Length: 398
Image 1 (cartoon, rainbow, N blue to C red):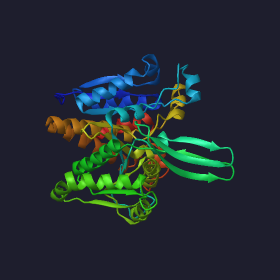
Image 2 (cartoon, rainbow, N blue to C red):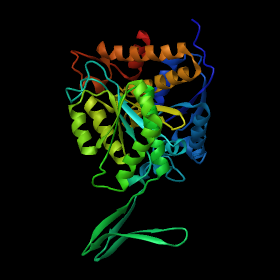
Image 3 (cartoon, one colour):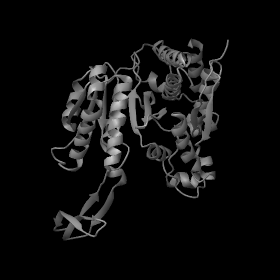
Image 4 (cartoon, rainbow, N blue to C red):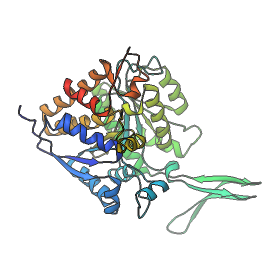
């Protein structure tokens, strides 16, 4: 059989621990037999990030800007324990955070819907995609413990020395304060990424904040979204037959619970962090959640929404059998291959991505699955497969 050719490479970002093991299994069993795989490879495993002073992460992000499509394996963001375990020179930053900052991207996460893995919310029939702003708010906040009575103020000092002051609170005793910020440029990029992605997958877009309470901070998000929509996207949305809808975050939560799904829900950074975990859990499993980073310039980086499955990796090193769910990692590859095919006009590559996704879903719906899914499925008497055998079962159907 002739392998499918690729004219332009995908940026391939390898990762850590159990997902790195799955990464190679997926390539060996599901991709290389069928595709003349063309990738520009970057090793984002923690050992090589340490060796390069994290330059490899920066290089991989810049390569994504060049080639427009990347696929990323899950990676370790080191804490104090990892610094000791890997004898690191320093506690390297999150690779995802570095890549998001360089691409100025927005993260879109959506569940993979499979018959037999039923959502906790019974009326959800279609995936709900969370679009999470990936800059600022509490993640770049400055915090202070107030030791006793006194006045806390927000102070802005302009370049010419003039000041604007707002009283936060006159403290009578101990307390806490936090300063958050965001950038109009970043919010504008977030808005355009959301509008472009909605047009790309032809789904309605919701956006929610708490502008009635946060009349300047959250209201600025609302205003920027509305201005950009009216100036650049309103006609395009009408032509595509989709809508943009703004509401308060509490109203959005109520609406989501009563909806059938099938739309994109855009959230500020913290809201998106929380809601994406709620959506993934309610739909069944974090291992059944796709994630794609989209830049306003139209760069795409696909990955699984979960971590490196550390516990399974340690069992694997001991020679013990694991039953690790590889579905989200498979779908990271299919997303990247489909987008590469779309950019290059390569219909064979796009069709292959569709077939691999169908083979993966059909495998689960036939009753063959990893242990995490077997524990929650409504399919009678499922067959529990180990990590490698599940991928091989998908390969048989493919």
